[in-house]
Image (cartoon, rainbow, N blue to C red; front, top):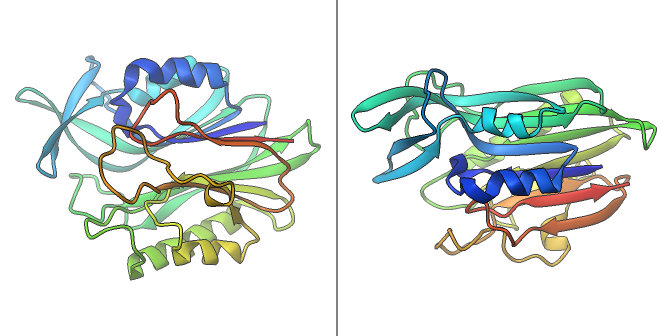
Length: 267
């Protein structure tokens, strides 16, 4: 089984993105920063905020689904705000997307906010609402279930250090994990955590038996050349000891976002 986690950055690096996803052919695809704009018949819109204008792929969720039509999928927005085509504003949604191959029955799932609540009337000030989604699958090849949970951790303009909000987020994530995962079964947790490697979040998740693979496998960078700041850790993937890791990679090339994809292959 292959599991891929990626902050898709609103599809800003769109040209290589779909070919990369198709070539990887992950059984479970966990994406953060996905855009859906019902009613927009154009491909690109512009986000205006935080002193910047950023191109966004208007219906990234649907375009990826067309590449993964053999997967069941779901889109889980954390907020609704405006994206623009010149002076025309379109109500758009931003959040998580999960795709799972149909040969892997989904036998449980959990969705909830780990910070704040759904914002229906604008993106809001930072730290913005954040959610997490988990699915419990039956893996016929292994003859047992596996749960996969991902999130987009809150962004704090002050940095990636520990805060009370991040501590609360970690405990909320644990509560969500316990809703979908049965202790003793296999568990994978991944996503853009927006945290430094020494965050207390990993100790909180460690109480579930989860071990973090990015730093444990010697990777020192989860960002691409599109990201120009310091503190180049953001994305992580954690597993319980009963997950047989055959391959784990922080994919440096091709660059399909300002984040590098995390690719896990398990037995």
